[in-house]
Length: 341
Image 1: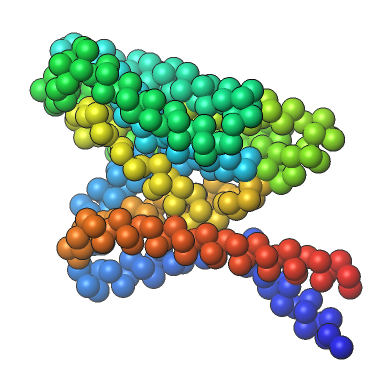
Image 2: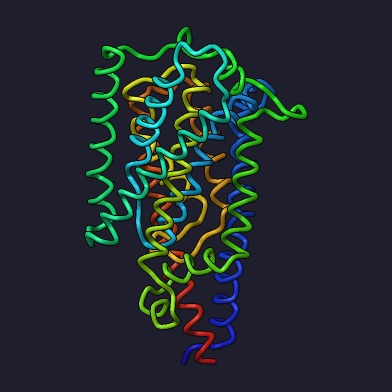
């Protein structure tokens, strides 16, 4: 005979762990940082932490969009190519222009990103193409367009720092109230989307769509419209990130952000967003992005080969997915046991 009191206690612990998963990620991040700092004290130097924050900013912004499509049981593997395309187009527009407004450049990038996101949304919603297949196709389209546009307009040459406006380059290095602009933009993005996902009807509909599309339809949610919207929003964030990428690294290259899509997926899964959709916290995603930035920085400081870095990042994805699957299974089991008591 099963002791229901024991099963209820263990089930409560599982559910409680899931509810504080963000704190668990933050705790692991702190422990990880302490361990790496013992190996190489440079890791916790202000300069290195500053670089980690700047490098993580762009990842964190794109991860918000990736989070939303995963919440709806989708995925977007075109984000890396989208960053490359939007960054290249904007760089070609503003090159050799002395005083181009950086905010206008970002706006142009967001418009380009919205168009890319809309294409993904149409293919998935209207074409009924599985998200991974649709975005795989657009990933190659966007990357191909980046090469074609750059070749036709710039002869295939990179748009280097010498071609970019000083105001644009200074924007990425600049600060506002002593806060770096890239970090400030990231903070604003997270505050906006925290409110959007948690305190608006559309945000709750995104969660409901991922939890159960059939139930969402029954209660009157336009599931297709919701899914389409998540891809458009993701595209907007990708377009913004493309411009910030060029400003941060002061160059636009045809292979910019290659493989970045997998990094964003890793950050989202590490952040506790359920692969099956419908569950996840935006703050967990932020901690996941910071953890990825810390891991990449530590590997560079330790001197790990780039080939091993790829393998390690792949291993992180697998571990995160396994943990997510085990936790989801245990939560479902715990909830069933609690209902039976």
